[in-house]
Structure formats: structure tokens, C-alpha cells
Image 1 (tube, rainbow, N blue to C red):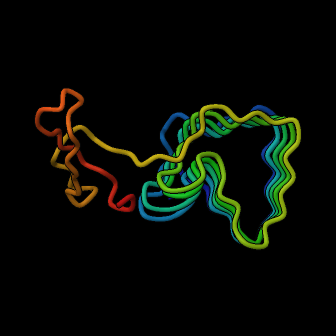
Image 2: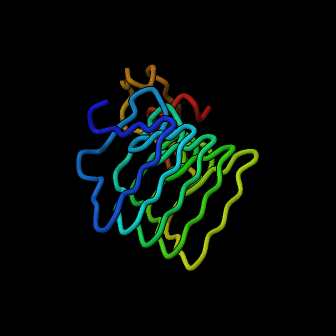
Length: 171
């Protein structure tokens, strides 16, 4: 679990100017690029969660199931996942106050969030900028990490096609 935090049935409190970024924290096949939380309680205060990646799963920064999450004066930036670029939560209670979500990408759903069944959410005085749900692509035709999944698209000139790799979960 290098560069990946996992909390199961616990209480965690990140306080004051913590930085969880820089190494492109990555859940290679699972959920929660930076933090995966199950049956726990997490408080995040004045913390930056940046560059989390869950290439095949949910919650680029944080994945929460059956948990309580409180976020205050923190930022979630440049994270990406299949569902919920920054945060994916189900069966959870989420409280967010004075926090920012910027440049997060959900490949299928939820640029900033995917909030699943039985998730109570309160968001106050927070800012959302340039989050989007869009499928990633590479301007190459060899992408073994994505199963060499590529598509053809007509050129803007109207003559010929360009081919590029597309994440297989986006088809």
C-alpha cells in the first residue's frame, strides 16, 4: 500500500496543513487513490489531497463506505477515477465545510463526487471549479494498460480519421 492510506474500523483525524500529494497516489486496481475508508470515521482539516488516481476504481482522492467523513478548509485537486473524480461515498455521512474541489475527473460519472445510496451529505461554503466527467484518451494506438482499446474519429478537416486509445470502461 505504498502512497495509499487504508482505514478499516478506525478513527483518523488529519489536522492542520497536512499535504497528501505529489507522488500521484494510485490505487492500481482498487478504490480510493489516496484514502480508502470502510466502517470508519475520518476528519480532514486544513489538508490538501491532490493527484490521487483510481484508474480502474472509484474515488480518486477518497473512497468511503459505511463511514462518517468531515472535511473542513481542505482541497481536493487534480484527482481522477472511473466514478467520483475526487470522492466516492456510499452508505456514509459526509459533511464538507469551506473546502475546494478543482480539476477532478470522473471517467464515467461525477467529476467531483459520486454519492451513492443511503449517503447523507451536507456541503456548505465550498467551491467547485473545472470538475468534469469525461472519458480519458491517449493520442496513440498502443495502450496495453487499457487493453489496446482504441477508436477512430473523423478529422476536423473532414478527410480521413485519427485513431486514439480510450479507457475501456468508457465504451
